[in-house]
Length: 533
Image (cartoon, rainbow, N blue to C red; front, side):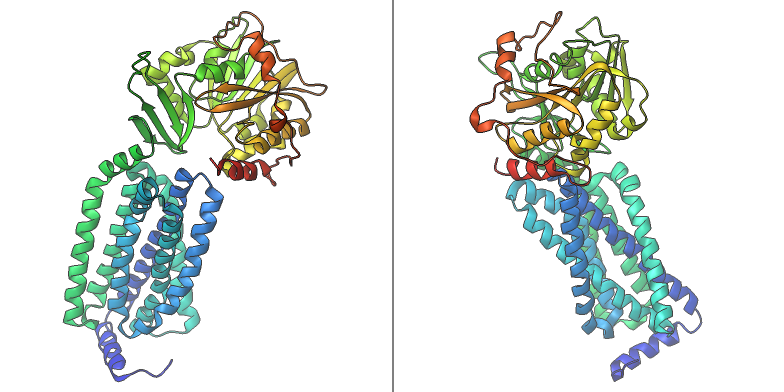
């Protein structure tokens, strides 16, 4: 132990006298505070990562930024706490109040920065750094408080402290996805954790270390606690209205439905009827990405479905497409005896089955007795699938994040090939060959690498732009691009289909890497190309 000043020795002496009769209770209180603070700190980290994945879509990138910045800042905070060790109790309480305030408001502030200020990236880094500094300052101060109750060997004290810290982190890690998000949502969940953080810090200091603080410090902390409580309480009360207003700022048309499922944010917008034609435009967005526009979705779904069903089509498998629009086109064929749809997010299917406007678009496809719905991750489901299908339609979200990039890999297409019956075909929505040519041709090359012959084609979908698909069959050349009765498309005429197979010289095949689970090159291409638009 180093040499103490007279004031430090007097303060320590008062604390030791106070705890002489109940040091075990005092130590347990400190370790309980460590436990709670660790849980809160991890929730703040996870909340920043989750928000970034919803808004930006780059889960790995967001996690790397948040964790990297916060761990670095924790080291800075640990060093910055050294001058405050002589007044550890009041310093710890002040830090917890500040951490509760900033951590509780962090998600709200970052959402505002994204919706109105276009400053999300610098705001995220700044928030992660400040929170990391405050979290890093906790442990040194708690160590001082623990030692002042009863001095013990440094190794034993560190073991006790970090045991409580790590177990608390486990609680926070489990509470965030399984309790806070489902019950409170992201905005209010962070505010609740901030309140818990403040209570834990202030309660420890005012019950165990009260006599170690001056009257002035106690008054200041009491006033600070009131300010934090009022601020967090007000933010909790207005969180819903704030979220509705901020979310609407991100979309052109009025939002008519919004929810955050276990997997993604689901938003449905609807414009006022267009004066010239009296037609309204309903649009579905998942994590901010457009999935369909009601005024032209038929172009996309006709191009996706009808070419792959020009052949044997008794048993059809649809991977993705929880809105039921691809399923609608499949069910137009009486020869289809079964249509299995595999969708990860049941909330999307529930919306498609219950929202009258979407039911009108998909023709109540899910009520057809030929439809079998499977709620599962397509990649995992394919690994154990035993049925063989005559046609497989891969209607997945774009590979703009790690979770979806695996659905555009050699491994995924190999799994699809394993469930194809003899003479069967597959079609994949593959993005825009105009806006993202490397991404498009990477998907086509990856399908070929999985043992398919391919036929790339593209059509114009006004809400998306020039949009591409890949028709494929195992082995041999690519299948012919055609439609067969009873298909009666509104858009996909024989001449349109013939033109769809022609690519201009500036958007033809390019030299690209194939995408695998361990080397998801399609993710790199998508991020680099769409960043320009």
